[in-house]
Amino acid sequence: MPSVISTPRQRMLTTLKGSAGALLLSGASLTAPLALATEVTIACGPGGDSDMCPELAQQWAEQSGNRVNVISTPNDTTEKLSLYQQLLSSGSSDIDVLIVDMAWPGLLDDHLVDLSRYLPDDATEGFFPALVDNGTVAGRLVAMPWYTDAGVLYYRKDLLEKYDQQVPETWQQLTETARTIQAAERDAGNADFWGYSFQGRAYEGLTCNALEWVASQGGGALVDDAGEVTIDNSRAAEALDLAASWIGSIAPEGALNHTEEESRGLFQSGNALFLRNWPYVWKLSQAEGSTVAGKVGMAPLPHGPQGESRATLGGWNLAVSRYSEHPQAAAELVAYITAAPQQKAHAMKMGRNPTIEHLYQDDEVLASNPSMGELYEALRTGVARPASVTGDAYARVSNAFFNRTHQVLSGEETGAQAVEALGRELTRIGRRGW
Image (cartoon, rainbow, N blue to C red; front, side):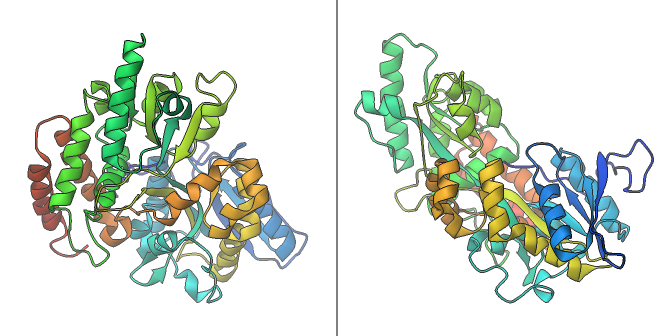
């Protein structure tokens, strides 16, 4: 799922060595019985049943003979980033390994080590290339992909079968199929039924949706790998105009204020044919008590006539602080947690999506969660937000993009007007270089 990027001006949080009021929730020393062992501190997630980081860190400690101190950080991504920014900007060595969001490598890279200096040359072999590229800033591998997400299309397979319709491959097909079945369901008595549900609020989630529309239309990804602003083009404009045509037609006006959960709620209540969301929705839609349990399918997102399916990538990585007193041991811990056996266990036990390609063909992984087989294609062709190339300017880039997109969805601007204005704005932001 997406996260909004904060800036260094945000309110700083209490430090790692703070008082009882510190935001760090807990710390546990996971030790191996070796007097001269190296101690490595890792910042995991918030702890609890969905966080396998402490367990894997303990395994590494037991196998390597080192000691691991596990710190549980705030669940809120903005608070987590603010904490990291405070610690790193002060040069603190309190944390060696950090769990970092997909959109943070470019923001934090000055404070992170180049992992390729400490790991074997083939350390990233087998990982999705786009995820490795996202963790590489100016040729430096500053983050190793751990688990990932990508936008996917959920659909009501029972309704497609009922009305003899196919899973759409293009956005135009989705529009037409949604319109046809929406009209039929309303004629049958469901006045609250809609054809499509997505995240349309002006926030990071809309950046993810709009990037998919634009990239799958062949309109680029806002800013290319060389740092050039590419958004001002006719295909990007067409993609935004098509999305605007959905509001009040196949998507409710309320979609302009929908995030992940509101859009999921509409679909899971049985009142939407299609839903764009993240993989977490699969298990919830199949859970006991779900109105649509057993009726849901999952497929890659549609594309434009001149493009291919492109899903925005999300997820979390592991990185090593440049202020670590034990960078070699810290890098080895990162390599252990992100290795295939640990990713497989993470996928089967927690349902987290691996960042290593062959695990999507693993029989045991697929048996534990069949939806992962459908997710593979979305990850293979996924598109990363331009966070690494734009660095600490990414927050402004994303804000400009989702605000302009929201204006198009709201009918305040045309797609052409929005991309032209956005092109000028992003050029100003990056004028002195990203």
